[in-house]
Image (cartoon, rainbow, N blue to C red; front, side, top):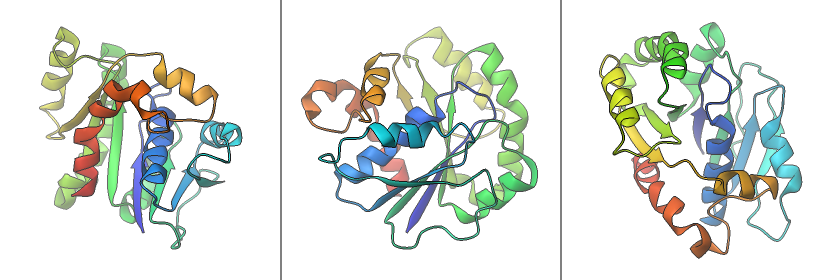
Length: 205
């Protein structure tokens, strides 16, 4: 079993979008996939409730924002959707049990400022395992000034950007049906799936 934590202390950063689509990718690869919703709003579990049984299955449970002691060993992949404001001892406990940490980040001055202390904590907690942490730039084109601003900001933390995901309604539309961009018909979201390539390669390392 491998576990991935999707975390950012700020709401609206795209955590659930990343977590659900990542779970959908693994499920479409034939992997036994479990989605652990740690947020009391349970947005990820609501997404699962809309998912058509004919689609590749994703199981899930509500983690209750509690310390994770035992993750489901029968799963190939566990994707953990963290709550906003995750920090301190709970963050430390989660970091100890996961294989990778993905931090979705929108390149705005407000989002970067709100995430700064969190990134410092991540860096300090994982000094000996820095390769476990990656940033996903959300709703941004890598050729834009905003992307450049984000890259400059992240130099202070030595945490790589492992993918750029564009601003598109595709994610909103598939979520409303309990689907992901990886579910058939795949050709419909070809451009979005391609943008996930670097992130999926990083997770496989």
